[in-house]
Length: 228
Length: 228
DNA sequence: ATAATAGTGTCTATTAGACAATATCCT
DNA sequence: AGGATATTGTCTAATAGACACTATTAT
Image (cartoon, rainbow over all chains, first blue to last red; front, side, top):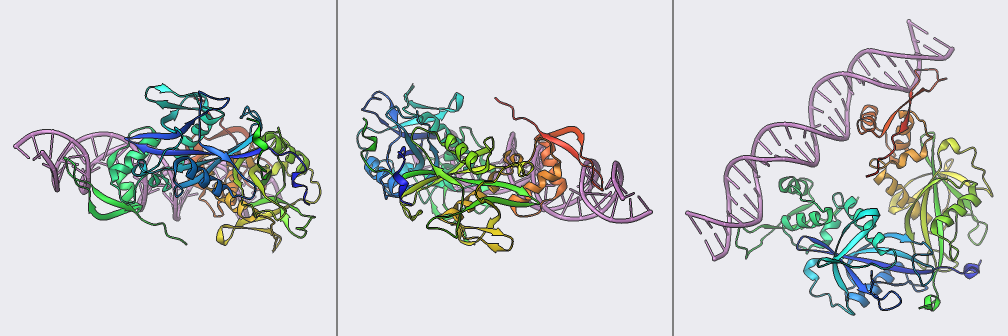
């Protein structure tokens, strides 16, 4: 049957939670709204065009908004409350994209996007802090950010997702910083190292970090997952 | 701006993975197609109407297809490949709904739905078996079923989702059967009981099952989760 | 008494938390 | 040498796997 368009459908969009960890803090990218919602900030997003896949849509938005196309990303969840967007019924598929801090400078920022510190607040929502002021978030984006943090926390220690925040070579201290930023609490160094090493998740990569005023840390790399 | 419909959007649908566990086997509900895809089976689904929430859509489909509206359900993932539906670009949000085996008989079945055994196969897809023959699945529904099994396996032992397969009062053996069906492997009874009891997940509910030709099992109930 | 399943006890292997001690580099 | 962080070691607590054993019911 070709009555796919017999009913009126909601509009379909993709919203991106673009995260990075810098100086031990979890940062998300938000954009100022210049329409009815002026004064508020929102996650970068865009509509899904007919005939385009969700992944193509994500990459289109990444390219347009921050000039990167090859980031690690994964689907989070889909938000469909008819009242979530004051302009009309827009169903939005949220994606998590991760930008390694080492590439922060090369991400060309267009049209005023801003990195904000995020953390969980009450009532299942998240706060976005810029300096010491909290930015108002448009739509249901505070809820999307909160769900994102919970998802990340849930999978950070049994998946390899944390390494998406790091370059190919890293020190164990850097890995721990990423985990601490995501979990929002300090971890014990010996236990953390043991887990990574005993489980064969990372291996030494020969080289040693230099240039600090203290003992240099060994550099590690992720051990590729074996297929079955 | 009211140019939400300026572009042509994909159609938007919801597909349901309705699961139950019976006789130690994980079963999903599929429906025979009577259109171009006649001969194949598909998950129950329907379009999202403008102005209706995703949850309303799920409940509408549950009511129409199996006559139940109060099932436990949760969102799985969204599938958007433009080629996934031969009739056109349909983005589908998959939901998992769980029907306790104790309510199987009261679910009035309309228009030939069928319970099929499901299990993981190669290449990230799932097989649907009816008796000893495997049913062909339409669209990307074999992939959706596979993702569902993986999701369930991932959260079965740290969440309470397994109890949605059971009535309010149950024996520990019944809980174990659900877990074994989902994980696809046997579990050790003592360790399983300890986990449920030591963690305070379930508690004895006084009554004792009767009528078997062997020692009756104590009945338990889920301990409600505390809020914070 | 027997069959069949319910329920308990014990031992061991593994993993994580806590904290102390040692190693190495730059200035 | 001294400061600062890297790296290792040890002890303990908690958890899970494995398996043997006891308990209870209907027939």
